[in-house]
Amino acid sequence: MTDKLRDKIRDQASRLCELQNYKTICESRIKQLSPSHPIPVLESHLRLGKEINVNESFNPANNKIPDSQNQLLKQKNDELAYALEIKERVSYFCIILLLIIIGGKYIK
Image (tube, rainbow, N blue to C red; front, side, top):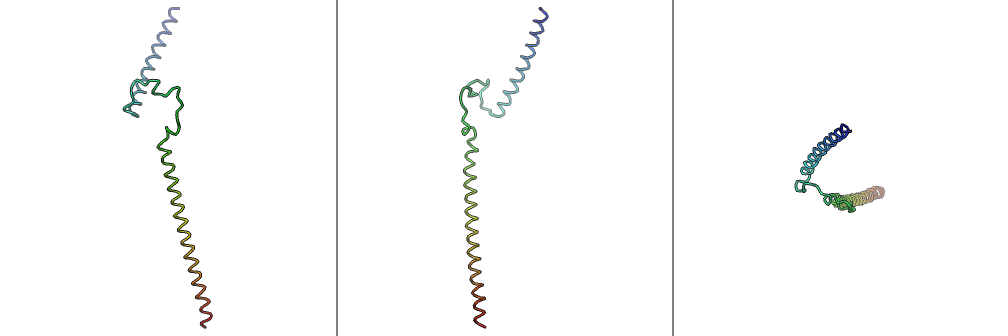
């Protein structure tokens, strides 16, 4: 029985060392990503028990979506205005061409 307890204590000590090493790695990574983040990480830092607002989490992305939509709308309006201008020019050209053709028949 003593041997089993000794083995169990060794296993737990080994696992504790692994977890402490992992904790050190995680804390180093947190400091890389957010240098001002306090260490050790506390439950309150994780927002446990609180609902995370998705809009808050992705606020920069949400700000870019309306800008992109406005940019696409402006581009579409510009293209539509250009198409209308071309249509008017083609119509004007057709009328002039038709007048030239008709006028040529009466001149001869």
